[in-house]
Image 1 (spheres, rainbow, N blue to C red):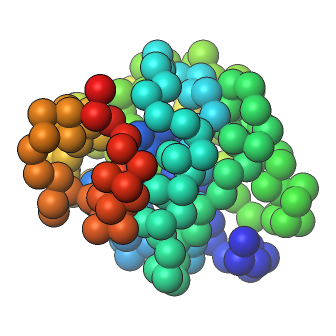
Image 2 (cartoon, rainbow, N blue to C red; image 1 turned 60 degrees about the vertical axis):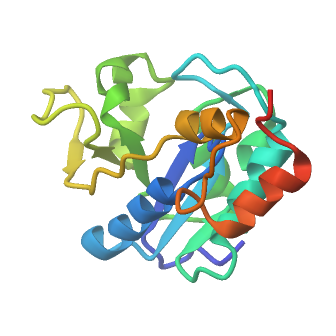
Length: 196
């Protein structure tokens, strides 16, 4: 992993099942509009914030993320949550990255507004609120939802692509061209993912 020291770094976690251009364009916007140096894409082992049925292996999800950010200067991938195992908690990832890379900056934590009302249920959210910057993507709400936490609402582009749609299109034998990186598309077909 690239050196994090003296960098402004954002963490973009998710199931990435699969990762698509919406995720990547959002990362680009975070870098350009909020002046971050790096976005780390981290697939969750078991997400703590939503119901998740594993339709493909953790390794396949990570490999697709790795392929999608390969050779992109400001994007990196990490399997830190998959290697740690169990339920993936943001605070554990922050602490592990701080320790592993001796990082003393404030991570940006990227999440969607679908999670805003459940923030109080996040493990150690008060600590996260103190040591990191919470960056909320607007997806479902046109207005900013009031919160007890320091939220930076981000005027992101709304990209009408979803991992669910991609999985459904593959199942129905429809094209997924222009929805995700070509390397990821080829990986999905080579591995026979999402057919059932």
